[in-house]
Length: 404
Image 1 (tube, one colour):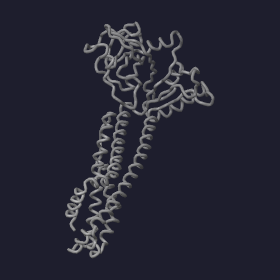
Image 2 (cartoon, helix red, strand yellow):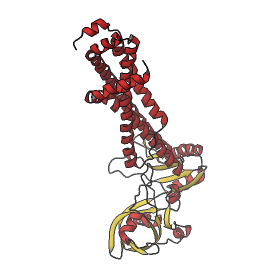
Image 3 (tube, one colour):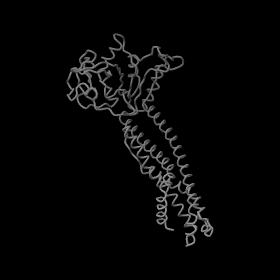
């Protein structure tokens, strides 16, 4: 029997039993769809991580109180200016460092008023977090030296206060103090890494917020962010900062008072979680595919019983056992390939929707598609071979006597 003829007959059989064929293929559909969806989402996730790493690099390190070490109302040990000065002089490869302060204040312009988060930042902030300007300028050294009352707006707060008016050079009032708008940032997209701000944030020089928080007392830092030139220097910094803080402040009930964290650790944690989820989905997909394969074996056995007389007639007019075997194998493989093909479309559609929601780049590799089709073909062969063998071993005379 020619493969093309077998394929044509198989498609006729499938078309003649549409509902049964559809229900038979559901397990393959779901299993292959899950495989495609998790593979594509995994590719998109890793591309997004690589993009984030490209923006920020993998050399960020930050220090903050170890919240789990403290009781609910216990005073936290905070970093001092001397701590920061030590880090900046004793650790090699430090490119920039900053601490940020934030608080909620009212901001108004010509009768438009709202409450929002005001971030007190240093000059290095915009470089560390790769914040770009839509118009205007960033803070300069002179703004900090002369304690200038200037601010940079995110796009949503600018739209709230100014509607369609250009905010540059205008005066806004923050907590009863006037600030000149010197910049407007680009809209911030979703990402794994950020400074905690959103598109409704206002940036001011850190001194304004720090003074409000600490009054006349020495300024202390909730968080200190440091950027290094190489990964090796991040390793050195983590070791030295940990050693310095533990020696100076000691442990609290056996726990370190500070957490020293790094960007590549977070990326690795997220990647590990995705890998675990991928394995779980893979297991579910494999179970679904195997169940689908068993369903195909079952339906092919039913088909052999239903078509016993047809098999007998074919054998009587010259069809060999090999022809019958090939015919039923092709039917099983065709069912699996159609199920796998629709599963690929289903899984790719789910992945496309997820990528659109998460604003990730949708990408699907040819190897994933070919792998899914190979799995479908293998399932058809594995679970279709026994019913096909059983059909090929029917005796023509016994088959012709069948009334089924």
